[in-house]
Image: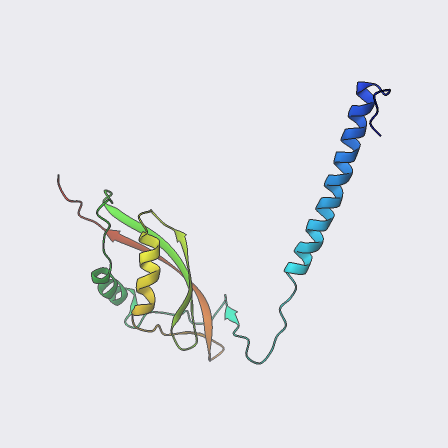
Length: 154
């Protein structure tokens, strides 16, 4: 307990002890909440499992060359962008029906380029979904996109 009668050293030790106890209790509470947050999800017949390891990866119909040919005309280079190339990395789920969902930007050069890519992807053709043991599966896909830019000469 802190009092005027105790020395500065004794009061400092008391404050340090209380702080340590408070920190330990807070950590235990945070850990308990973390354990509750990451409980194993209950499985039911409608749960859509997303595979990380598949036999045949999801792919764009016609391959990546076709993807690039169809993607480039839809992409609008921001006027503010001055680099020679734009590199964006996105991650998304290819569903069993080939549709794109749950897009996330992994690397974005700025100027809302990453968001533009995420907006364009669902408007394109459906992908060929992944296969695992002969079964069509939803899968996670990471896609690096590099676009060569001809900067305007000023």
